[in-house]
Image 1 (tube, rainbow, N blue to C red):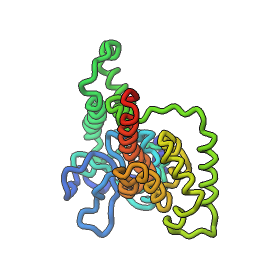
Image 2: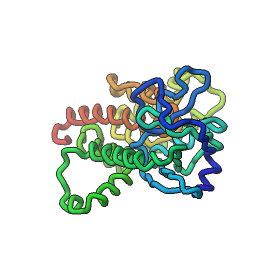
Image 3: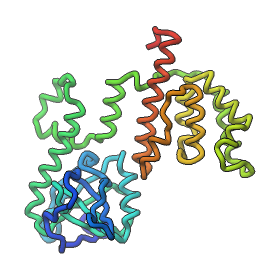
Length: 313
C-alpha cells in the first residue's frame, strides 16, 4: 500500500510541522497550494474531514506513523479532478490551521485514497484520534434528536463509532432531508411515459442539429422545444422524468437556460438552476447543487398539487 501511494504522492519532509496558515479558521482537510500569493493555501478545501469514510493509523517501512484514508463516494470524483489539476504541484493537509504535510501530486488519484505523513510523525496518533472523532461527531450531529435505536445503542462504543466513521456524510445528509422535510421531495408514480419519452427524444435530436444557432432563444422558438415545454407545463409530475433526462447530463450553458425556461414558465417563482451550479467547479459539487435546486422545485410542485387536491399532501 505504501509503495502504491508513494507512486502517487511524493512527500516532502522540509515543511515543518505546525507551519501556520496566515488565514485562520480553515476546516481540517486537503487544500490546493497556490503560487504567487501571500497566503499560498487556497481558501476553499478540496475535501474535509466529514468527506472521509475510512481512517487508519499505520506505520511505513521505516516505522514512521502514517494516517491512511479514503474519500467518500460523493466526493471521490472531486478528489480525482482536483488532484488531476494539481499534477506536478503540491497540495496541503491542514489541521487546526497548520500545514501537516504538503505532498507533490504525480497524477489524478481516482481511487479516493490518501496518506498523511509528517516529519514529526509522533504527533500523528493524536491527530488521527481527533480527525476520527471529528468525522464521528459530524454524523452524530446529523442524527441529533432522533429516537435512539435500542439495538444500535446496545453495541459497544467502539462499534458505534466504527459505523459512524464508515457512513458517507453526504448520503446521510440527503436521507435526513428526505425523511425530515417531505415537502422538499415529490412522490410520484408514472405508469405511462411513452408520449413523454417520444417528446424528449425529439428534443434531443433537435438540439443535436448543427445548423441551429448557439443562442438559447433560438432553440426556444422551435416547435419541438415548444411541444416538450407545453407537455411539462400541462403535466408537471413529468418534471421528475425531466430531472433524469439528457438536459441534466450536461447542465451548464445552453441546457441550463432551457431548464430555467421550462420550469419558470410553470413556476415563475422558481430559482434559476444557474445560480446553484455556477458556484461549483467540479462534478460532485455540481450534482449536489442540482439536488438542492430540485428540492426547491419539489416544494413548488407540492404546493401546486395541494392546491389542486388538499388530500394529496
